[in-house]
Amino acid sequence: MSEPALPSRLPSARHRRRAIARLVALQTIAITGILVTSCSIGIPTTSAGLNSGQAIMDLESAVLQLREDNALLQAQIDSLGAVTAYQDTILRQLATLSNVTMRPPGLTVP
Image (tube, rainbow, N blue to C red):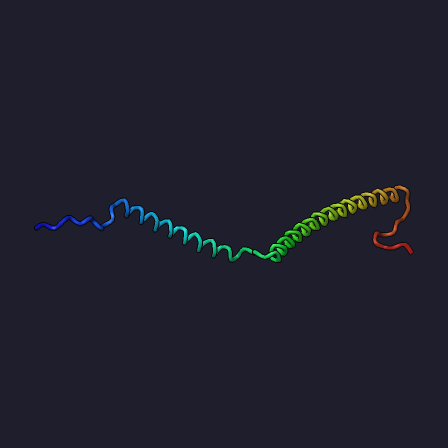
């Protein structure tokens, strides 16, 4: 007597490819979840963290504005110094031409 042929219990190549694809997809999802979780640790999630970040950005823009204002004021001071030096030179030349003596610069009037 011959034994009846038993159905093959081994998975076919198509079933193996599906199983491997599912395994790869599951591993990809797990690795992605782990990476997202580990990266989100450094991100502030509380409103206090977000508010402090906004405050730092506001402070940075205020410091930048102060620097610009300081540069503008320094340019104006330099310009006024140049105008004063020019006027002092003209006054000294006029005083020399008219034989009038002038006090040296830096002395205050009593």
